[in-house]
Length: 201
Image (cartoon, rainbow, N blue to C red; front, side, top):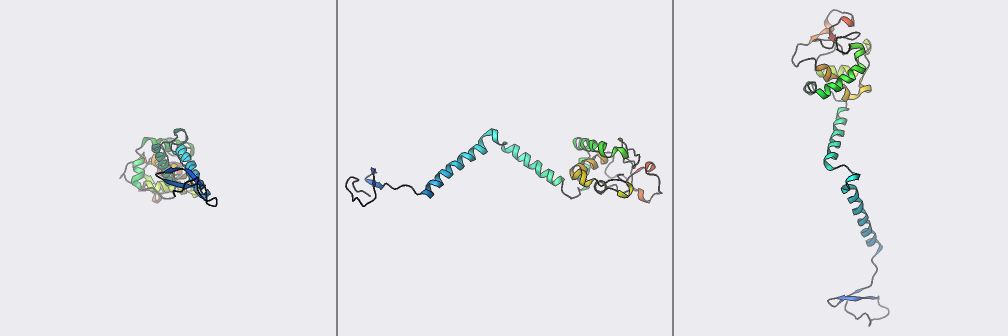
């Protein structure tokens, strides 16, 4: 459009006074949809920067990844899948895990098994004689489901999978992979306090 803004039909739309290389523009107001898009994008950009870049409002990326990985690990630990024997043997050599398992043992198990695992109402947990299976995953299973007939609670719903892994790892830290496993359920019946095995109760 190159019409002189001072010389145009009154019925025509107004023309802006400025020109670029002889080109002039109609003085149209931008449509609302265009303005809303522009202002919305500006607000979004400001909010995005404030949330993702302003250091006091959000964890750094590396810390956020660590937190998400920890949440995933926690969810996996609380799932219903029994851990593999190799996993529990490995954890039984981890001081942090066995210390956590010991803390749980002292508050939930020591009254029946003694703090040193030597047995009282419940069997000796350091013996190679096992009443309900001596492989690590079997110990985990026994703790989880309990032995109600012998008075051992079902600890699964109370402690959760993560703490039971720690607990089983603590018990297995008194044993070695490949050691003999004697089936105590086939032995002559003895009082629980005299049975040198593990029912995990």
